[in-house]
Length: 235
Image 1 (tube, rainbow, N blue to C red):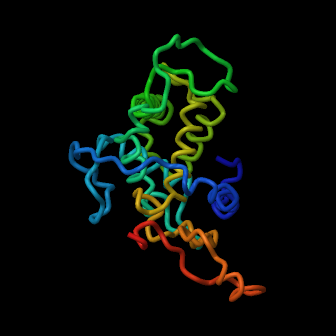
Image 2: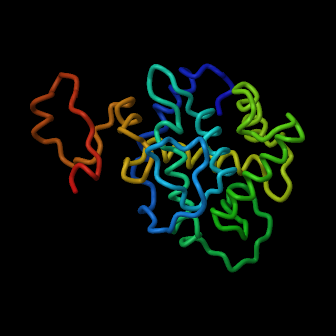
């Protein structure tokens, strides 16, 4: 998170960070729904695939803190970021399909990348549990029950490593949470996030079409005002 708590300034960072993430996600998982959806799930949302209601409540609160609703777009959870994260952690990415997991798992330097024996689903489970534990010790309640200003302060403490987690690094967890939230905000809507292509509309990203030869002629020197198109528009 940026140090400045102004959501418009924070959103300016999103504008620069987003479009490179649009195609970086794994395919939607074919997992069975597990457990009932938390009360924070919108009425039209799909059932949870892997997150527990407590974990989902944390993810919703974190997404809305990182991506607050403003004049530029709805909040992170309203854009489906929590749904995206649930789907990703339920599929091949969450199961660590592309990770080397035979060890040894020595503590490595940050530049060496992910060095833990946990797959991403296990890592986020441990991170959310540790974050809520730290939040209860610090504020007396779970993260999702904090006031917005306290949520932001808590995420900043995690980001800087000042929040003491048991078992994993709060800095590493905050970085992973930020990355997957940005992926969910800017990915193709078919993966569950970027609902109504809100993020694409915000940055002016046209979406899936791979060639714009005719549009280049038509819109040369003019604003490109066509609505974006997703994978679903071509299926």
